[in-house]
Image 1: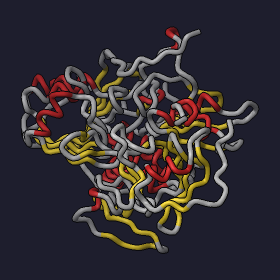
Image 2: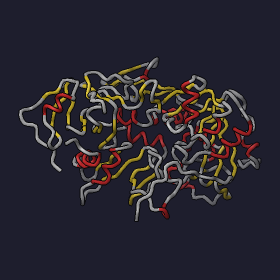
Image 3: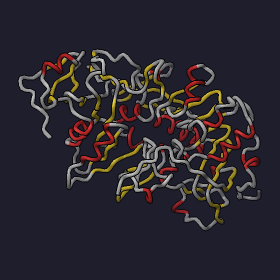
Image 4: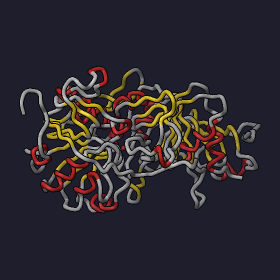
Amino acid sequence: MAGFDKVVSSYEEAMAGLEDNMTIIAGGFGLCGIPENLIAEIKRKGSKGLTVVSNNCGVDDFGLGVLLPDRQISKIVASYVGENAEFERQMMSGELEVVLTPQGTLAEKMRAGGAGIPAFFTATGYGTPVAEGKEEREFNGRHYILEEAIKGDFAIVKAWKADRYGNLVFRKTARNFNPLAATAGKITVVEVEEIVEPGELDPDHIHTPGIYVDRLIQGTFEKRIEQRTIRQK
Amino acid sequence: MALSREQLAQRVAQELQDGYYVNLGIGIPTLVANYVPKGMEVMLQSENGLLGMGQFPTEEEIDADLINAGKQTVTMATGASIFDSAESFAMIRGGHVDLTVLGAFEVDVNGNIASYMIPGKLIKGMGGAMDLVAGADNIIVTMTHASKHGESKLLKHCTLPLTGKGCIKRVLTDLAFIEIKGGKFHLLERAPGVTVEEIVKLTAGELVIPENVPEMQF
């Protein structure tokens, strides 16, 4: 690597430095826009005791779900975890700690983490189990709870295109949590479908500037569809 | 007769207005999109980052990078925009969505809603529901009036963990359209052929009944 060139040559290099018990923030919504090869590398590496922050936890055999059989995840922060039998088993038996977090709060925790804001007030979750143990305050007659930002030792991100400097473009709803995750990692690793030379992307069309990106790798993707729903012509 | 899922969606659709930005939850709320009145334009918000959700794709149009909040493949309507999850919930939390429609397990006379967890049985998570009920002013909850065993879901106090506190003002069930104010349910309309007595019998929380309770019109 030289200068602003963020490209690494292998997935092993992309996830170098990941150790047991670290916190990983992952982009993706369901199976859409997940960093599937970076997740596979974490499985290969066998890191254990991980805290994973992600909207969902994949399905039994794809996405973050592949980290469950070998008990690599000890804690997950997510908004919705309903698609995964092994997940449910580990959660019910207490092997896996689950912190259910409202989707908008989860997104904002990542955004705040990346933006140097330690905490924020939100009305979301007031008066619910989510508010337990959290500071409450009233502004203009409404109740709010204090939510703390999240930062990760690693952030793993899937984008569509990047230039070698790590400027990122996402595609359609595969964007979701990815730009937020990208800002919140001490080390942010991004995998993309295509890497182009600096200058080839229109600066006005870049979703995530390269300043947030530490490592970049080009991969091939299965892009599995969770709910294939079609209309008849 | 209790309303069918389609009739529930049709009745909700009567509350749409031209130019509305609308968030539809999973299940019955999704069906509302099928009954947008002709000549009316509404823009559907999907909280995973799409404003201007179109219909389901044809086999040829399927795109793994384009899904809705229920993880179903969708298309984009003309004039759609795409954004990240923080931006999506800025719209929702910031009160920019004109109408939110979502399901529930229970609501009570104080406008509390429980919709995301049945302890020991079902722990899937709240997804975006807590943000939606906290951020929206105009919410319609759609649900069945009672469980299969005849237990009311319109309660004095919710028994399940809450999704939101004091945030629900209107509930459409398969039997009735109900407003919540002043710590009571108020009966606005009844499903065609359903009597006030039937509704009273299946409503556990205090229900105010006006002299005239019109039938829903379709």
